[in-house]
View 1 (cartoon, rainbow, N blue to C red):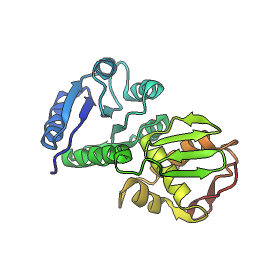
View 2 (cartoon, rainbow, N blue to C red):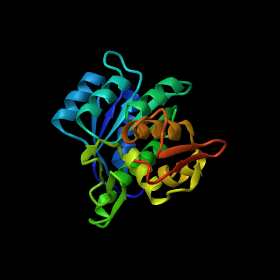
View 3 (cartoon, rainbow, N blue to C red):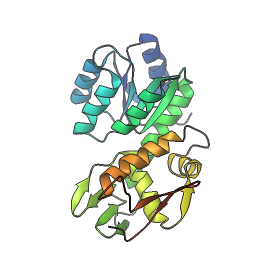
Length: 233
């Protein structure tokens, strides 16, 4: 496994899970902080802001969904949720709250480490993009180098995956993509739950459309997937 760098905060009430995840992430080159519940996770986050958070959904007290919600009020740090098999509602709720990715329990610690690496790589893409690179559509602007988005001059608080999805759409206007296509091209997955794409499209529409219920920019192509239509601001 190639060495990485960065601080990861793992929030899980299962000591065994925390220990296994910590060991695999440290083997991958990460510095790891641990928290055994939501309240401790929020405290550690404030004291030592991480580069990414691995967050269990089902915890006593402040559960993972509430932690995700609170983190999104103050930060766009990448979040990878841990959800149990069969907890589709919680998985979708986490994505709706702004989580970037998820891994289903029981999971392979190696797969989790790879997912963490993938999400961080995308979050750090501004270090590789030309500072002046820009995509625009009317009042919507994406600065690729700075990974900043704005609508009518106001900054858009996009998560890592939302930014990547919008950048992909703006870079390929007028072309329809299936959810499987988007999973592969934006998430880098050749398999996975396609509802992830549906939830992210919904969140993106809420941020860039005048009327998310009647989207003008991110159009649904029935039987296919989605298409970005320029000039619909």
